[in-house]
Length: 155
Image (spheres, rainbow, N blue to C red):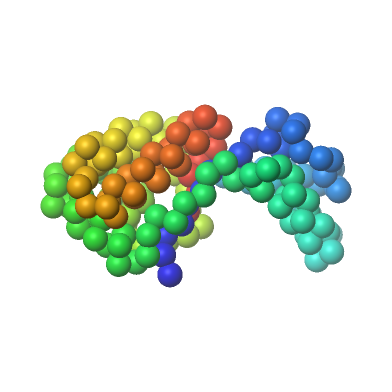
């Protein structure tokens, strides 16, 4: 188990994808992911066609950035490092990113990401341990993708 994060690309929204098999059913959820309207009449075959279309919809397979931020132990190590180095300086990192080494299904709104980017650049300046340097670099890449697309970071 571990912590993964991604940012959806805008290829589909920007009209760069091939036509959807059911364009009348295509919607985007709050994370920017294309999904099907849930009207109760959608069968498994429709979902499978949608999923295949989504995987093949663009060169990114729908994700501009995808990162493995760490396993449970490495995320706990990063959390401890942040708590030991002025926790008030890293509120979003502590409360929304490394609060658990295995959270999933949540997301950080694009409007919060500039603050996350500032915190992560602060962390990057402090980091000397390779795992923390890599973590900071990965979060910066996710944050920059979120700012570029306006889409949230999804965990």
